[in-house]
Length: 210
Image (tube, rainbow, N blue to C red; front, side, top):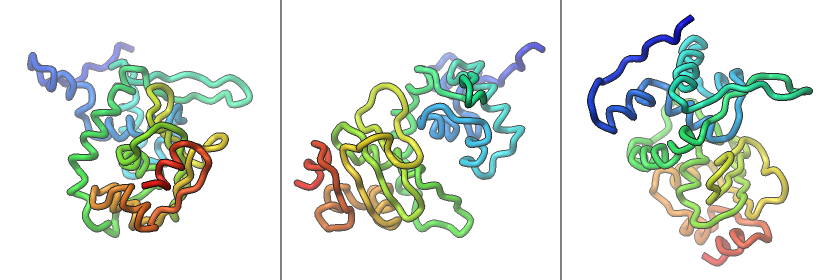
């Protein structure tokens, strides 16, 4: 079966060419999820509430054809297929960060229909951290970890940090939302006692000294 033809803006413009690849609904949110590293299809579907199975499969195929993602089979005992970003796909991190910063003003109050996952706060918090290291973040909604300053590999991950983190941050949802919306800096949140910092790494010591 020949690959399906994707729609194009047919404009000799780098922005138009970029939107040919990532402008479809759900594509950038799939990138957001894959910035956590290899993910199974079922995990992606669970963390993208509202996307249909057909739509997710279609977008992943488009991303493979566009050189943004690959699909591979894990060795035993896993023996399952996972999707992961290519270097080209990971290069969308600053695009997502800029888009997230631009959209901070649109957050407002959480609507009753809004889904939420703890790790959706990962990229906004990553923008707020000025430093490098492994950071574990604990919220009421769950636990995730960040690879601050990392230029390769996963940007963040769901669940506790693999190994001893350089810093642990504990905060409530309202504080995390305020930081994500740009209403409160991480430094001010730490200084006000709204973020509890622990750990012996240089990053933890730096945050405690703010």
